Image (cartoon, rainbow, N blue to C red; front, side, top):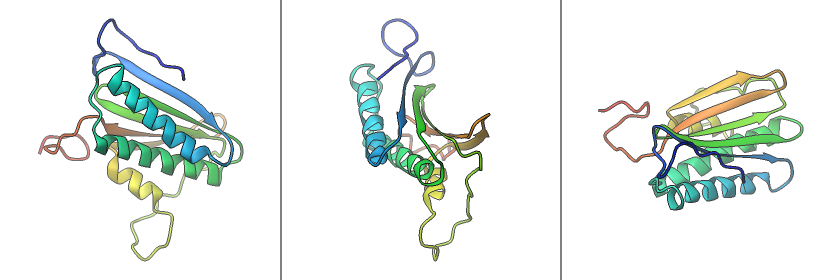
Length: 157
């Protein structure tokens, strides 16, 4: 596990970043990706002293699971997962080789399946899709701190 830490001494949410990346290609990718996210956030808390609530831990694992599932289902070859904590957020990025952007369908309670991106958008501050020279990169941002006084976009209520 490669990590990048900026600054000296104790990690600051604003000034420093901690990151991990992994490539996945195989049958147990989704479980391994969730395990990587759980271990990474555990290290963020234990090693770097940043608070990670159970809600944030579960949310990041859900987002990782949904994005890696989509990459494995709709794109040939491997997918890459990047996790980064900086500025009070967890950034989750998944790259795959399929350049076609995902279909973000409107909510439909009668539809069976294909609700993954709906869920990701509901729990994330933002979701962005970027075409790459090969494939695409999907990035979501999740608030690290539990702040019940803020809306999804991080604005104070």
